[in-house]
Picture 1: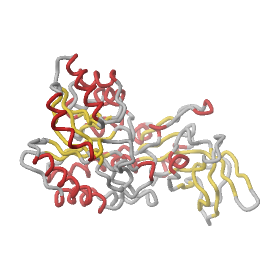
Picture 2: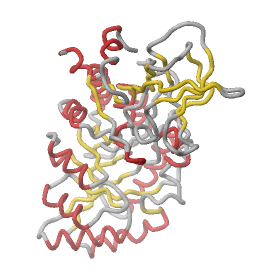
Picture 3: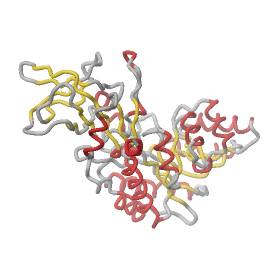
Length: 387
């Protein structure tokens, strides 16, 4: 939802650009914090969703930690004020340089995803004469019931250690003197809207915990990742994501042992709804059976529709009236690069502004310069209010 003043201001800004509603972000971050607080749960924001500095500073001020999947994300988290002890470093392909960065910074833990990775981290920690804290990421073989590109917890996925390799851990840990196992890490996928999936995860974690206890391995932290989805069809639905129901479910069904803490890595659910991609209509092209609205944004600015066939609600914020159907297409030389087919819009013409909603998560952060296009810029609501 945009104010009249905001839409008026948009007309004077070069498109395409991302518009970030910082007040909505603050409200969402506060909502997450209040929902997790009764259970003393720990929330780490997943930088892969959006790593803009202004976004991160708002989230960091709420006291959240950071979930990083690259050395540069670790650097960005440190630069924007996240305490090292609250930074977790995941990812299946950490380079030696990235691991040394994490060791030297004293991050909270590496989420390790394979036995060879454990061996490399141990050797690098030994070279630094330090102990690396690790959480073992296990692959629980749970179907997240989401798009197959963003499911991560099945046995055929590249992420995590398979349950069949679990038996190797006790003896392996004895031989790796520069590792300290502090926890268990699981993440089964993204854009999960069926909370029963998380209930299944809780039940699986409880069984895995029994195995660790039977092998006299005590874990301080349980990290269940993130994955909570958002409502792309109704971007102004402030009742979703269901943060209270989400955290309550884990409180009810996951059995923490004495002294354990429960950690979450939320990204999309925190930031997705706080902004839109604003793009301008270049041409209206009339086909035999279809009207095409050709806009100046493309997959270089928002790749989700081309990559995942993802849906984003598209609104014409310059026009009103009886609706017509348009295919909203872009200049990139790829047939898959379409923002939406048969989109219901009021009569649309050259120069109109379209808002592609719920675009902050995996939007600007995945931008590219394919076709030598300029990188998309960002505008913040606070900037507009000052002008």
